[in-house]
Length: 171
Image (cartoon, rainbow, N blue to C red):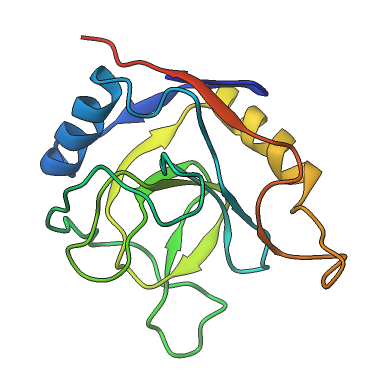
């Protein structure tokens, strides 16, 4: 469960699908790693709709000081918007790890608030429950923080500051 300043985001972790990823996430939660961190990135592209969190620095560059191997998804349906057939559908409600390339997962994760088309390079390790989807919809409706250079951005910090106040897992 992620308790944010904008509402709860209850999660279901899928250990059978990604055991190492779930173990790392649980470890970080139990050590209060995510508490009082912000969700630093909201994307609102037609083919990519995610809220990214899990960076203690809030910049998109931070992590836990370790990396681990990918546990990539199989069997995802092809994205209808991708004529190349390379991208797959990461469905609304998916919880997945962000990365900077193969085997670079650390602490950053993303929550999919609308079906998105991505290469299957991101480990799926859980899903967001309906109450969490309502919270994600609130964040998404606020949009991305505008700047003088880009008054209508589709990628950047969420306009509604989203802070993970407390992250907890049930035993």
